Length: 501
Image (cartoon, rainbow, N blue to C red; front, top):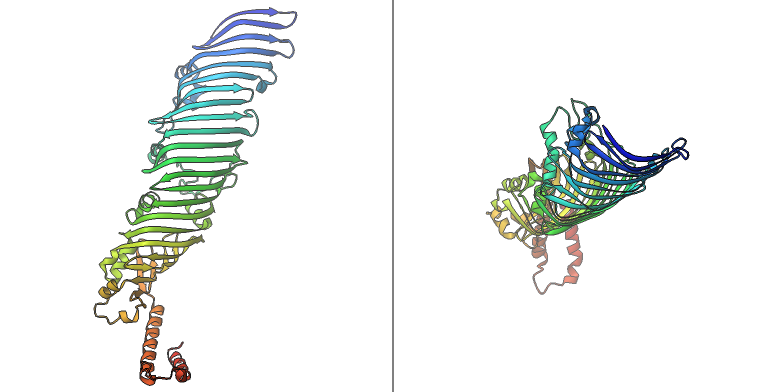
């Protein structure tokens, strides 16, 4: 340690005037100038402290290792310059900071496979710090950060921020963040994940001494290969409640918007979200969020849904998750999935392996680990009205309510022996099917209750028609319709009784 100074001491007034002072601690140099008064009783200072250029890597090497062991693996680097005015009574250290500037140049630290760097100027004033366009660089990504933080020495710290970027990729961050977990050190890097056979515990609650609000604007980003343009988000954090006021962007040829809350102060977190999708292409969305179904769903998807729940563990999510919503798909196509292939195999009709719909729409309710759905699919060759439940565990209990065009009905029943009992007035053949099993292994069967009802109804109609023709000669122009009404009613009643109507 070396000390070089030029000062004057006023013993009578217990004051020191520091013209110049330089402290060198293993290459870390601080310059001071200013005044100290009442040093014999309650000292007060008015000092300018200057850090001309501090190389972080060299500085850490100059400090005893015991003092910096916890930051060694971060491998901090870069240069810091600072000019700070300290003034006031030394027995109130938190009030000493008056004004100052801190310049950061390429400040870096390692976090997993990531090594972010910051460059910019921080302006200090009392208990607040302000920065305008602090530059964050992370690989090929860069962003400008503007923020103001106040009440730095109290609770809560108040932070307001704006993050902007023309091009910021999320995928490299997600891959790097997963690297330590994938590599493994015998410990789980996932909050709440069970280790050593122990029961997994929920994360939280958290008590954050922070009140924050901010905005994020990104021209283009990529999430799991999905391009997102014009991403914007506004948020606030108050009393451990994180609120997403708005989140919008363009994705897969359409748009999305989202709002939501996360209560960080509750164990397992309590959350609620509203999501709207408008005219997005279903296939890339399904590929990201349901990869096992990739390549099976196509069309323009619009969705409105609200979901709420509590917990981060799969079992807790299944038990608590609830919600409702509605969706529409324009120019839709279903192909390749176990459901579609299973349907085609069950009725032995290859034309059903690739289903096209001009429109599909429906509503759903999520509760008790099941999705209760009611929907309607309209196409030139196939119409369906699936309703029933799909479990979050994949179990199925659905009524398909399928109808086939006259052309497909003819192919299905080439001899014409069965279709006559299951066609509507437009000639569409009805397929009253039930689906059980799971999404990966569905089991199809005919709804025997509906089958019996259809056969009975068809037979009743045919019998009534023939009896009316023979008994009352309804096709004759000479028949007195008014006189025959009582007889027709008696015949209708008799037929209804015969068929249990």
